[in-house]
Length: 490
Ligand code: NDP
Ligand code: BG6
Image (cartoon, rainbow, N blue to C red; front, side):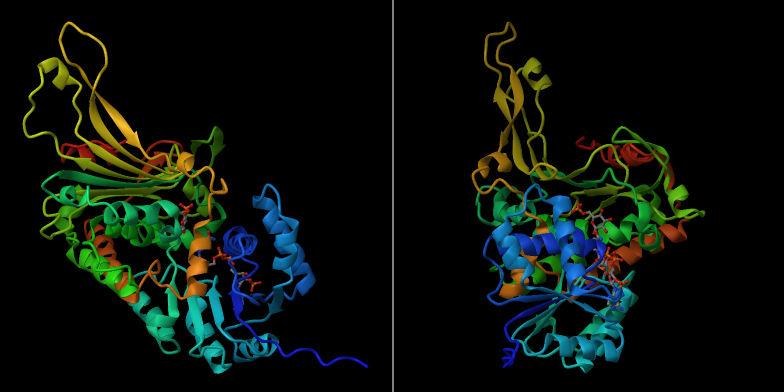
């Protein structure tokens, strides 16, 4: 006699776009790591969703292949537990019948997490169909990938479409930079230490540099990238989030609303750019062919196959017009096909108001600098002046020395593996903690400022200048910072 199957229950994660690039490279490996660490919710079932009609068994084989691509070894016990949770559903979630069939496949459940790892252009229709199929209820959380729009108007339209089916508390907008350990360390550095707070102002800080340099080109992603460019792909989200964490006032607590309120104040205080100032404040670039990581690579125009003014590099100087930061420039730069991969924040302190040392000692003097390396290596170092040991005719000599936290070394005993940023974020989705997620107000304020920058450069007729792949950006990038009497920290 066949036994009636147990009714399905427990939490469910629906991974829309479960066969896509992001799911294969980041999300499924992150979920697997959470499994290995015993951090997935009890009884969680995971449904990969796409439209290609593959069988659940083929999907499971593909998940294994995706893991093997990035893992040195796969812990087989964890794999068995993990894959037992994984299923696949083939269907179009923008269609009511597709969403209904998905709801039938999932059956009964407690919490439902729907991760939108699909193009944002389908969010509105997918939300409508999923809600129509009864899949968006009070116990549902929606995880949205960037980009949330291409400008303020489209961002508002997207946010409104999602808000029709879910409250802001149910929405988790991902900016994966907020899941990086060192970015969270920035919060700890600023708000778990009293030492920096009195110095964290325009009185002592000369300027701030934020660099996100990549060696990769745009490659197959050009259809998406060509619509967005460096300003909208990187600066509007990841870099502005870093800027907010550096510049915001201490929040009263780590409650998502408290943190968001402080970030929004920074965004509102960002000085708008105008047609008159933009050519002094912004440098745009586009890579041509060159040598990257020792290999000859093609230029952006060859990848796209048609003329385009999309920027693959942007550097800009901006100001935050409030008491803490008035007059302190923030220099932001990001680009593809640069000489090295590096994400770094530099807090450059002011020079001494007066030196008591001799001329020869003064010759070695540099102003203090706090360097926060996010990737590839994770490190926080404070450059301090030190007495150089030994005797010299001229008397006391000085030298700059880094006081370094060397995070990789300090935590080498903690598993030794660098976490994927998405692990932290997925765990927080399951825990319902929205502190590291982006509120609608932040997205829209960021777009409002970014729209102003793009509009100003269009009015001024600014075009990207060429730079050869493997070089550090177009002509003008050094002049941008030198005009203020500074230099890039390279
Ligand atoms: P891909 O194009 O690689 O994958 C898209 C996925 O969505 C595929 O699995 C596709 O499968 C599925 N899909 C498309 N339409 C539907 C539909 N109507 N119903 C069900 N499934 C559908 O995109 P990415 O993985 O690169 O990106 C996904 C999201 O993540 C995007 O929002 C992107 O901007 C964002 N993102 C991606 C990053 C990355 O590194 N890839 C980085 C940061 C953000 P099928 O066509 O078979 O249906
Ligand atoms: C994504 C951008 O959001 O971030 C990509 O769309 C970029 O263009 C990527 O390459 C960089 O992320 P990371 O974590 O590799 O610095």
